[in-house]
Image: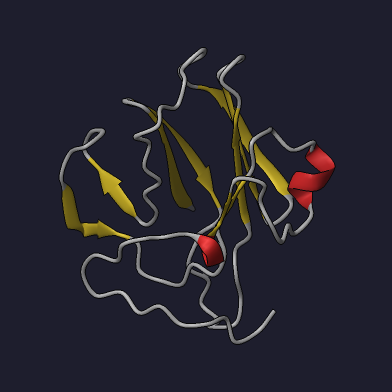
Length: 137
């Protein structure tokens, strides 16, 4: 089982789902996460199947200084990183919407987000990171 952490501000929830690093180099795990401030409900989908729903920080508002951190566990918001807790593998696409998608859309492979699309994002690589174009769809 893989462990997926979702941090909202200084609150976090953990989901247990499929291992994120399949043994075949051509296999992938499609992960969708939603969080709605009004209810505080966070939902994790993996490979089109609902993994679980949990409550995390109802009513929290993401501020202008928000950061999206992928592949690295952070001890606290703005805290330090431990290279031994970093993701090893490939992240192909990252998208962010300004609304919670209905379950049907969460199950489908989505190709663009309304707020964030990795291909138009300014980002910073730390440590040994190789950024290359996707070689298959």
